Image 1 (tube, rainbow, N blue to C red):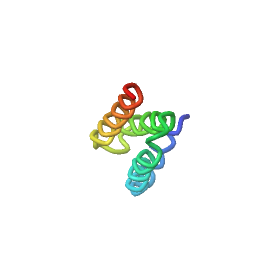
Image 2: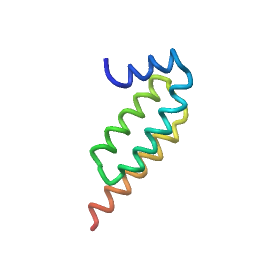
Image 3: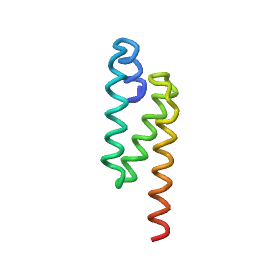
Image 4: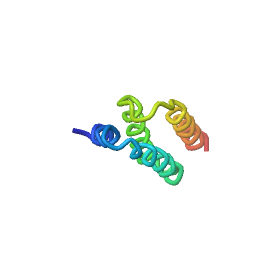
Length: 78
């Protein structure tokens, strides 16, 4: 069982859990956006949670992908 499945189970038992965890994960990404390894891990987790139906706002994942691409471009061209 992976973290996404555990969070999905919590979401099924406690609907308010996902209302708190998704914004916290997004905030963590913005705090750690200079750390690409953590950023990729958070992106993977948020994608799994989207697939498991914990939340249904696809723009969360798209915004993070855009920010990662911008970060990679800055690294590659500087």
